[in-house]
Image (tube, rainbow over all chains, first blue to last red; front, side, top):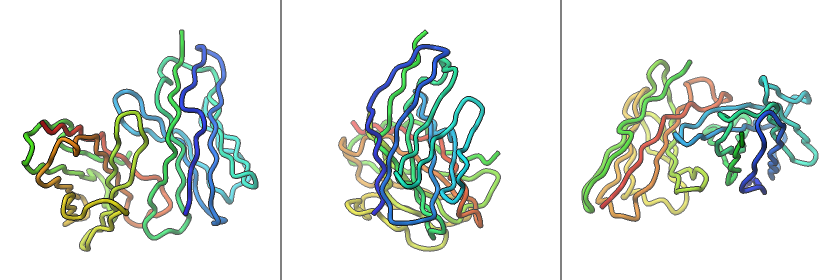
Length: 116
Length: 117
């Protein structure tokens, strides 16, 4: 069974600085998807970034980028130029490639606080 | 973009009553929808996978008779918490996957906060 581990329950960063959130996972599959979701206090789930395991290039979305190390089964999220609106819970998630159901497996989350 | 509407957003009811939560895909068809439960300061826990026109697949430990799921159309799935008790109080979130897009991200509803008195 796949598992997702986020080892940092809480982190804080000063506004405008850079922060990296860690995520490791365990799977025997070779093809899969990885996601980072943001959940602000409103509790809405917002997709931040997505990575296909078969792609070597790290995904980037504006201030958000990932460091995907497939051999190490690591998928960290880097937030550059942190903004107050980035304050939220961040969940790393795994999804099998080609799975008939396509359900997501979430990590326990990291609570990020951006301080002015 | 794809929108998933979840209703109600917040419900308070007495112990012993049944509560129905709706999850609708507004601008796409969703053969598969997912129901999650989230306790305070915890992650999302998958409760069941709902497939249009067939029985839902429940995760281990989730009571089928307690959490009834119906997915009667390609745009609507419902979760009914039967004979709700205070321990059922939680945040419930649905998500939907567009038909034919099995490798695309799920679209999430805004969640339902359920409080049982």
